[in-house]
Length: 136
Image (tube, rainbow, N blue to C red):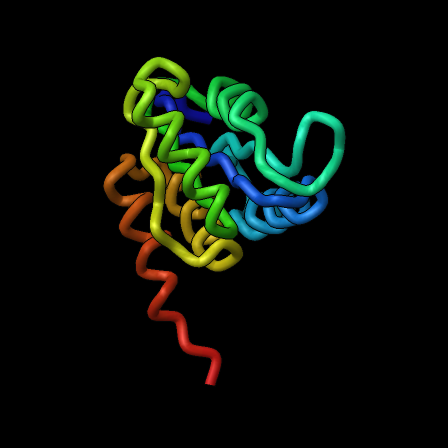
């Protein structure tokens, strides 16, 4: 295992169960060896559906190793919540980026790429390229 910090990944969903399941899937598909830190930030503090700036900030702090944090979201207000946190400037670790990517495919691509030791730009690019994955 390397001492080099890895890019952290935060998965923001309106549902805690969805965020946790996608995090588990992405980490599981990243293969053996060191896996990039992944945290789910789903739902509200009370366990309901929605998004929580506090849960997102806490998740980002947990995965931050100093190499940057990539945040992927599921739906509209999750995007708005992350954008608001980024605009505040002190709620998320330095070098936190909101990634425009499909939630499941993008999460898998981000975690696999980050686990390989790629930098934040490469992780963001891999997740974004997931829009091009065709199923037929």
